[in-house]
Length: 124
Image (cartoon, rainbow, N blue to C red; front, top):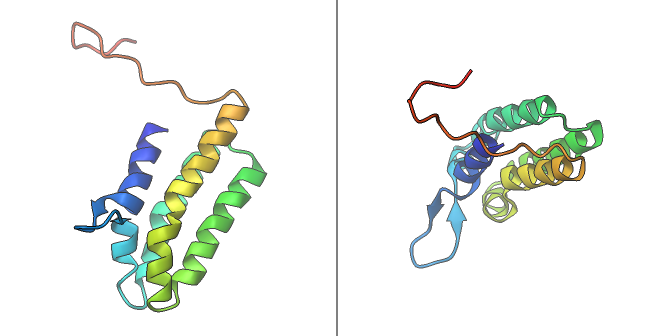
């Protein structure tokens, strides 16, 4: 879950635009590439969806996450408006929040990774 959270943050909020409180990520930057940017941004979205499935997300949650990405993709295809929308909508962070809430409600929230052993050898 931590890995997905870090990925979503990089995709949606990696950089702050100077002198503003606006954050943009790699997803927004990739989306600026005319014609293919928004399609390329679907690859990390697919990874997040696959990971959510592996973590035990229910079908309705997966559909909600897919809907979030579909909306982001569809609006993202519109020049300029799509880029502005992407900065504010932050589909990846929304999807991770949806997944986290679902896992928490189901009592399946992943726990923090165990601390490394003192000897430096992984515990088995």
